[in-house]
Length: 401
Ligand code: GN1
Ligand code: MG
Image (cartoon, rainbow, N blue to C red; front, side, top):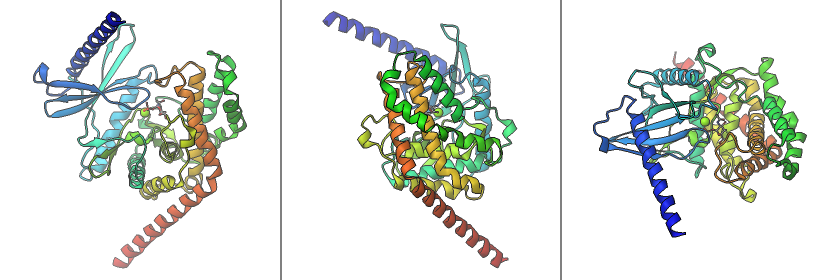
């Protein structure tokens, strides 16, 4: 036992330091002040199921280095163009009103990303952002005010991007939130049953099939123009908001990988509710600890609606709660599909991780369906009070003229 242990540890350290050396040399391709070799320290940042993320400290400055997963983000060049356009747009619009904003650090040649051929001949894509000082992310909100702040951050994002011409952005992953297509992929995975897992999943599969009608409720309305098509973030989980670690005020939204045109505000609201109105994180295996919390729902909704009240359409207001149910249902389908296919998409840390996540999301769907009327009432009351407030301001302005 003993010699093997030493050997294993030695190999581990060797690989680690090799990776660190490599990461250090990758950093040298970006426009950051690297004075001496000894001044750089790099550590992995947790969070995210797709990319690899590191914090880089150089003297007094910090950066975020990310390796983009090119098997998920195949159109990485277009994706980086999207990110750059959206960040520039937000920066111009919010200049002077925000203390920190995410920025891409250009490469030495002035590009948005740096790439190289990896050993297996695929392309490695790396990019760098500024690191926002004193910022934290949360897997689950500990207070209502964090939820309200997150709502405001995503509402501000929606407002900031609503006037970007949709044709100036690429749809880098077409049909990303096309729930019927996600359902199709799920059915294919069930029929192929590549890992012989279907047998144990009867209950989950039956639930999904008996609720398949949920899948069609957004896309059909987007297609026939009943719901407006918008530029949306598409990954609005709590961990994609940076908070000031002292005040817990939201600083900004991060992770612009899936920002795309032709989406729906329901996707962003829905995905945020999926992530934030739950009592636990999506990784919680004990379903007794997972429930849908109307107070959390209300706090997020208040922050979000406050920021989008001037642009949100009536039909969107009436469908926001449905959006939350559909996107949670879709996420359950995605996790279960990946489990059936042998965990090829989302990062997992144990063998049934994707199954745990799928069951967790299905529990939320069941609860949301039961509480749908209350959710709709909260949204409607909230909009009413903001509309009244807006009308009040209009009256005051008019009387001052
Ligand atoms: C993935 O990698 P991350 O955590 O930013 C996924 C989202 C899921 C999320 C679930 C491109 O996002 O759609 O909602 O995991 N991103 C992609 O945690 O598929
Ligand atoms: Mg993401």
